[in-house]
Length: 85
Image 1 (tube, rainbow, N blue to C red):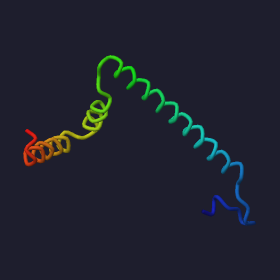
Image 2 (cartoon, rainbow, N blue to C red):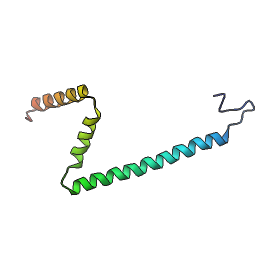
Image 3 (cartoon, rainbow, N blue to C red):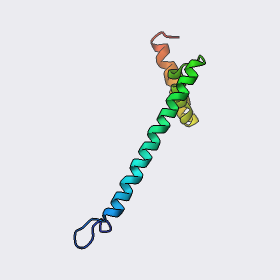
Image 4 (cartoon, rainbow, N blue to C red):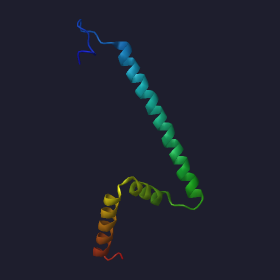
């Protein structure tokens, strides 16, 4: 905290502004990327793929194999318990 506030009690406004500018620029990039992702899902849907299922598969792909196997095991167990298989 000593680096952000000088001994006279003032804030380094140039540095602080720089941080906010960088954060805001990155937030705009993220917003643009989300738009790109929406367009890809729309394209996939137009070609007959189900975006909801694609999102589920993306979540599974991000998991490590052990976690994915556990999730799939539990899903199968829950479905069987509910008579869904």
